[in-house]
Length: 85
Image 1 (cartoon, one colour):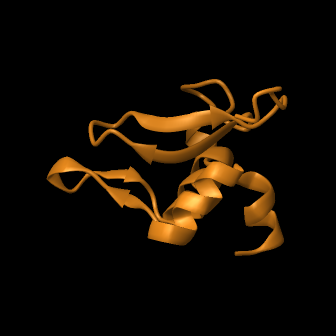
Image 2: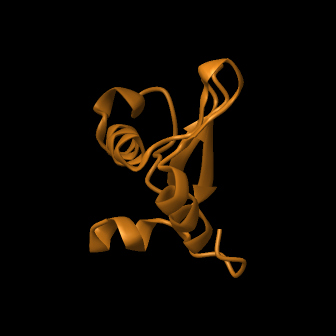
């Protein structure tokens, strides 16, 4: 895991990824993505210009999984929150 990856991940998510590298839920849904998929998806959400016309910027969010129906799981990355999420 690189320093950049460590800075982006919460300690709870880092621990989970060290143990499992993602969690596959019912029906093969990537409930928690693998580290590689987390990096890939966040770069996509943060840099894809096609989202600019449809949504607010995603820079403040950190994506880490989904529900299998198109809804990603996220937590607020910036501004930092007191509870660490």
